[in-house]
Image (spheres, helix red, strand yellow):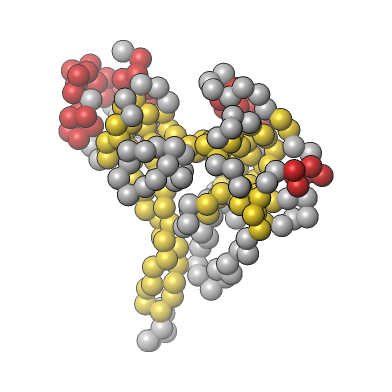
Length: 229
């Protein structure tokens, strides 16, 4: 937990230094001051799994399109409908009225700590709008984005003639360079074709560091290196 808090603080510091003017902590009793629309959460108890990134309400940091930034807001991110919910002081579930441009949440799952930064506003990604959120794996000249999407699938049950429904995960990756988005296949040939202007250096770096480009940390390491040379 100490690592989780420290890393969340680090991420907040990075955001604070880039395009976030100030941050306000929102006391629980003042959450009503954040404009929200009441929503009724759909009962998904008959579907195996969860539509959310995490089933628990997690205090996170949110930045709005007007530049205001708040921390310690209880958040829950639905990855089926790509909507960020928050909870007010009455424990009601709401959606934000103002456009959210960034949010960060830190949580634990399967004995691992996670810190995730999501952004909206990407206009050139096929099949999506500027309202959709993408996880930011790398910032810089080349931005590495990841899109996790959950959807419901049906499978044959154990009993003859029965079916079960469960949430399935799908993911896709994108590189955004000079506001142009490229769908990214996680293999060396496809990546080097997009980053052809530094192909020789990247090939040497992949070999020297024995990178597995189907692994998120290794892929991020390569794009960070690209941005540094």
